[in-house]
Length: 148
Image 1 (tube, rainbow, N blue to C red):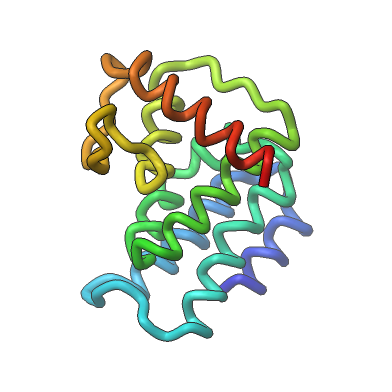
Image 2: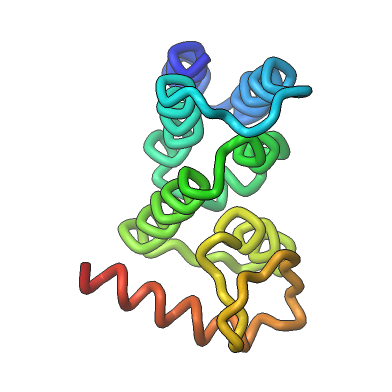
């Protein structure tokens, strides 16, 4: 699947709908299954999710893909955290500005495994109304990534 997505990104870089369709096919193949446990399959899914980030150098484009978070739902929590760090790294490297509330909500949903509430518990649901609180923690985590 990741090879097909890479092919699609090279042949039709302007057709983001094709990219989303490939991700949708991946979701269909994974539906009915629990979290991925096979390390080779997990690596392929991470490669699949990383391909649009690498091609477009812009998380905002990936945030428009409706199937992107649906594929991430099939990753275990550890791999989800790794993927969230890949997303944050992409944002930092490309100085990405996410300017709409709906895209910020999608981003927080993708990286929620890295976001902690002020009391230290993991945040299960992301609401834009709590942005300020998470922004403080998010900026702290970003600074920690820069140091590492």
